[in-house]
Amino acid sequence: MKIRQKNIFLQLIQLFFRDILRSPLSTQSFQTASDLINIFDIFLGYANHISAFIGNDRDKTFEFQLDEKASPGQFIMVWAPGMQEIPMSLSKTGRIKSITVKAIGPDTKRLHELTIGDMLRVRGPYGHGYEIDPEKKYLIIGGGVGTASILPAVKESGADTIIAARSERDLILRDRAMKYSRNVWIATDDGSAGFHGNAVQLMREKCKENSYDCVIACGPEVMLYFTYKACEELGLDCQLSLERHMKCGAGVCGCCVMDGQRVCKDGPVFSKAQISVMKDFGNAKRDECGRLVKFR
Image (cartoon, helix red, strand yellow):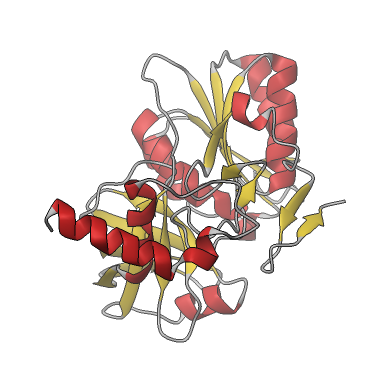
């Protein structure tokens, strides 16, 4: 598309989306071409067919081909007939990508009904992922379904890893993590597998035994909050992948804004310095209507 035609197209899109761009939820102004181009992605996407899956009635990993380059920690927006579009972390980031799904709500239950050959529409990848420095030593933590997000980082770094869940039944991707790291430790709240306790308790134990430069983590926000507090206490750097309600995934609608940061675009992975000034972290999030809801 020629530059003049592209500029005209951007102006038309800006006029069409003027109500979205003026959303009171958004603290960002969408003035650059790159921001507006993200709007196009909402209507575009890739119709992929599931090439393989593995799992059970609780969690399934679906593989599909997507040529777009992705980094550990990034996510895609996923849609299939009979469900709403939802964000999903990539559990594999090569040319053949994957998402790992637990059947929790109506949309993830619909995904669980899919099988090889079924159509899956995806957009992305989106967001800022984990920054892996080969000169640093990492401890990587995955809690619950957050394990899907950290798995590509484990593969890239080979770092020591903690996988945590309520019980052994709820653990996901343990076998794949063990292929990528020599040290994979399990923590379960009920003690049914591995360490009897939560991820942060096990993290503290491993930090006594080993020296680390940085903690990478994804999981429930209560786990991330206490991971951050432990890193502050232990003098460790950290990168945390946060979750908020997302509608567009491209930084346009403002639904996932958190203290001025768009989780879908500026995150979902944030540095320790960024998190240190987030008042909402561990305290509140926005619901589907944009209302701020306190955790406690």
